[in-house]
Image (cartoon, rainbow, N blue to C red; front, side, top):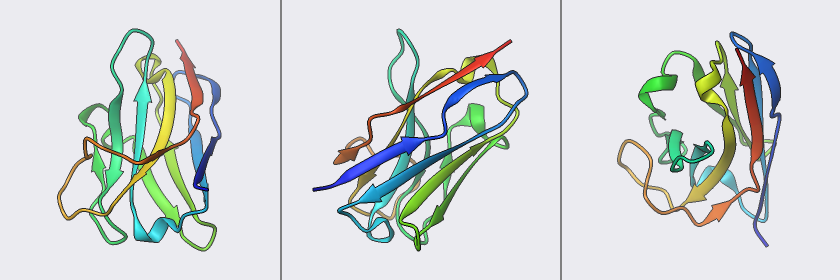
Length: 124
C-alpha cells in the first residue's frame, strides 16, 4: 500500500521559512516523478514544484522561483520542499504526489498517489 505523509507545515510570519517533508512508504521515490502542489481556499490546486524523474530538472511555478527548492533524499525515501521568504499568498494546503516518470518539464496533469496535505499559513 502506497502512502505519502507530508509534514512540516505550520504558521509563520511573512518572510519566514518552512521545510516540508514528504515521506513515502510502499513506493520507491527514485523510480517516480514527484510533485508538490498547493490549494488555497476558493482556488484550484496548482503545481508548485515538480520533477519528472530521478535526474530530471526541477520545475518551479513562477511565483515561487528563487524562494522554494525541491530536494530528495532517496536514502530516506523522502522529498522536501524548502520554502523561504514566505508571503501571505503562499498560504495553502500543500500536497506531495507521485506519478510515473516522464521526460518533459513541468508538472503533469495526472498523479497517482497523493498525501493528505499539510497546512501552511503565512501571516502578514
